[in-house]
Length: 309
Length: 251
Image (tube, rainbow over all chains, first blue to last red; front, side):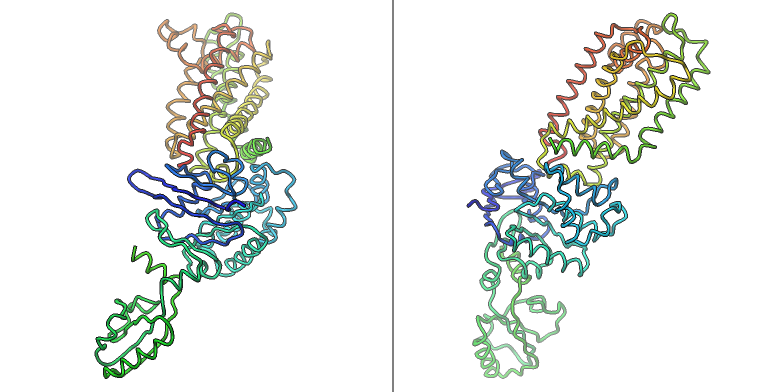
């Protein structure tokens, strides 16, 4: 069974900028996969190559075994892409837009599915409205509907919830999760890391055109971080605990940026180690004013990875 | 084939939805040209022997309008899609560069023909012009509109901004159409300007189309049709090469 997406040695330059630098990635069929990275990391370039919007300088990309260049027709039929930019054609209504998109993929008489997609995305009431008259959130829904109109087995969503209100975001994720449960492979890029953490089974992190982390979401969080003890103390931190201290405690582990003097962040491997930290503090004559065990989240892992590599 | 036909349908609907602007407006402009120029020049300008100036003017105006609108259709559709970003909707599907070309040039040709039909329908009764050789006129109308549709495609791909396209329209298309013998027979020009006119492919389109109406022309229509066919072939090859390479469309 071919991978939903198979990328080997993919590279792309824009002038002096190396947008992708030998990326290897395999995404299995049925996965809900997250592609994370800061702006300019290469996420959109990678998606653009998969979608045929950009051409690689080197390497290969396949969608369900079909090469995106040599077999572009087959590859594009297998792929649905929700672009990042909120674009629309102001000449047409929602229904016309979806019928045209369906026809471009060679599908006529696709109205039943178009109606179903509009229903799921709460677009039915706006089916005959001109695209210009829609709100930003509704336009975003149409973009998603356009990507689904040819029932692609692999769906790529490039920051689909940017600028979208909470209600739509929840509705959208329910719909996408149902598509995933029905067997569709989902590839998601987002800046909302809590979304990626909640939805994605596996995550790849990109930085400067390279994959710097790739793992199951839960393992990634475990691998890159143990727990933290956030403390406010009176007295000097005992030397025995100095190695555990994370610098710039205020910014770590979701702390306040301007956390005052005396706030410390100490790394521990598990909850049992918290007891030995407390014992060392007491032995050093410190008074504990506040204490909190902090669990790492994906955002923290993301920040750490981007900083380290 | 469904992909090509859908893109063609979309392009047709795009101009049809604003037909007042894309068809009615150029027809009105041509009618105004006819009224003003006929009034000013009817008794002053000699064209072909035995042919009234207004009868000479109608096919020229019709062809000029066709060429300008065929060019405007493909070029404006592309540049608008590029500027607004919705070009992505036709780049993501499995459409080949040939399908892309056929749909855009097909729609441009049909708009040109619709405008031409409108101009002839409105002006002919006023002037009382008949069509001596309809097939010749149809051949030149089709080939001319297709050539300008392909030229519009090239310009639309090349231009990054609407300003650049407007410059192309004002500094290339307008002079070439105005200096192609729409308002005069090139036989009335000095020898040097006659030679210069023969380098203008638009001249052959207008002269050939006019032959279909009047049965008289500056150049043998067979020669004119051959020139127009070569011009169309060259532009098509250029447009197809650009589309195939993804120039300014796929990064």
